[in-house]
Length: 297
Image (cartoon, rainbow, N blue to C red):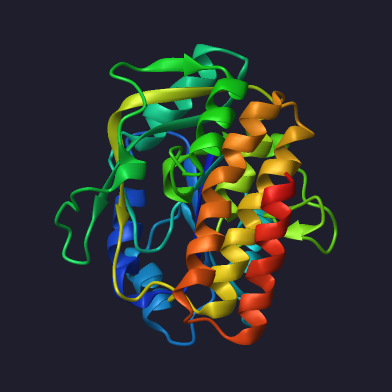
């Protein structure tokens, strides 16, 4: 399609669940969308699934070199032709009415900068996962949520209550990616653990959120996902501090009490990690620095 309204972007590398993710994208009930697949895998399973689909709405690209997480998401974003962006992780699933339901948010109110919905965590077999606190409903009915209200909620709770990339839709024009930077780069920091949340916060700085109180996507939790290590653990805690301070520049966490509340969880995480005694000396020193930073505010 030369001029689709929505671009479904699949930064692909996980062969195991890709076919199901692609099928859920193709089953969308919206009349105007494209599917962009940027293949970062080392095998041929993803390409074979695309070829077998034989769907003119799909544009497939095998990356000339491995781009990694940040690079592949950014390449997909650059390839998008649609006005609206809908990422789909290659192990997640979209409900057939996902595009129509999320796009309705932008038609509902011009102030909307981010459209999202309830999402359902599932395991590798597709069974629902219970007790996933971040997936709790934000409201009983579909509604408009002021950007500052939602941003402060997730920052103070230090929890991504908005959702993973497969949960959200936004306008392409609302996100600027500097030359040589990634989609998840903000204030000189390349976010990884909080990559999606850092983007959502930036979007909420531009307007309100529209929340669909129905489940429009499945978020898969499985053993093949990235495993934590000492360096990543510490970096994830550091990102929470950086995100809180960067958010203040957008007008969030204006009250000192709100900032202190947003720093409470990462400070507690750093203190507990250091007290565990399982980290390397280098990681432990970084944790001490984070603790000092958190206590200073």
